[in-house]
Amino acid sequence: MAIRNIVKDGDPVLTKRCRPVEQFDDRLGQLIDDMIETLKKAKGVGLAAPQVGILRRLFIIDMGDRVIEAINPEIVKASGKQRDVEGCLSCPNRWGYVTRPKHCVLRAYNRKGEQYELKLSDIDARCACHEYDHLEGQLFLRLVDEFVTMEEA
Ligand code: ZN
Image (tube, rainbow, N blue to C red; front, side):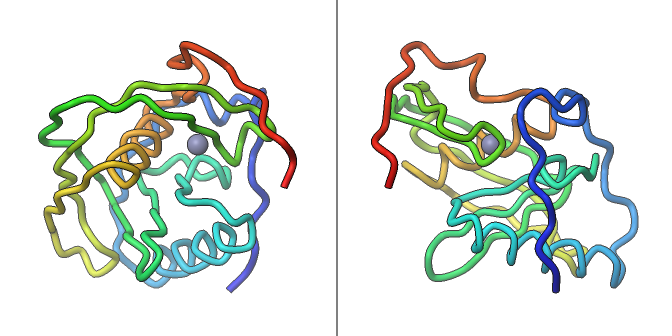
């Protein structure tokens, strides 16, 4: 496994729409393993492939006890609303309030090419929507209704 460089806001790779993953092979598994290691090192919650410079439809979310790998994901249902502070590993030190669905259903493939559906709520639903937007070339900044200043940890 290897730590990959996280692309920062301003890089055009973050504004492009990603293409579907077509090959479920060892190379894909390697990319996912690298993304997991990169996410853990950065102490983030979610990471999308374009954030490591790969324009493919893939993201991961660290749920604490396990990591979800979502390949060619779709948000097939969304309901409710939640407004909370959000940040992004590609936008260091920028935080702001974003309104997202409170619940959603994620449909995606795992690295073996098996399709699954997962019901997500609260921070997990927020994270899935945030990561999905990366695959469409969109950053959370455009959704912020109020920026906030956070103390450095
Ligand atoms: Zn992000």
